[in-house]
Amino acid sequence: MAREFEIRREVELPATPEQVWAAVATGAGTASWLFPTGEGEPHEVGEVWAGHTVTAFDPPHHYAVQAQGPDGSVFNALEYIIEARDGGTAVLRYVHSGIFTDDWDTQYDAVGQHTDFYLHTLGQYLRYFDGRPVTYVAAEGPEASKAPRAFDPLRRELGLPGPGTPGDPVRLALPGLDPLDGVVDYAAPNFLGVRTADGLYRFYGRNAFGAPVGLAHHLFAPGADQEKTELAWRAWLDGLYA
Image (tube, rainbow, N blue to C red; front, side):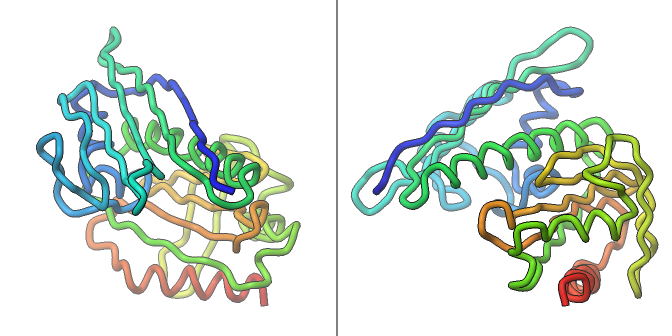
């Protein structure tokens, strides 16, 4: 049965409102911490961009979009309210609302946990990589990675004893790629973030929500080869869960 949901968060970010706006309201920005949402950027209320209609557009303070179902109900809506703070920082008030149609509790839990991870990644992007061109790569594990404890071998392969702790060193060599050499910047039961000198590496234990383990990386090294990198990480996941 369809049922409404709402996720609210408030985070302080190490950036000006203009920098936050560029990160949340442009295609290049969202690819740097969330995932690619569209090409270019919207410009006015009523415009349809990235599959959503813009419902608020007041740079750099208020941005909102929504998508409607065939019956006219709003099944997905995002709102960003950005306020300046002293010292060149900003507070972001974020609201994600809409309708879940199946397994409401699991979907709500999954979206809430993903939201916390995404907003943390937004802060890391703004602090360390703001404005740098990004290459986004993503891969999903095989069916075997849906198993209840499937996230554990991924952490072990990265050299982490248990869930890890921010600051823990991580090193991994993948055939055909430069070694991953960084530190944990986010550690939770179902999510792991690693920051290197030129990228934000995100690992998702979506097996906790009935889906395969996955990864999505935001690479800021010039000339990163998206296809080659995705193939290497997909092969790594396939080998990990063979």
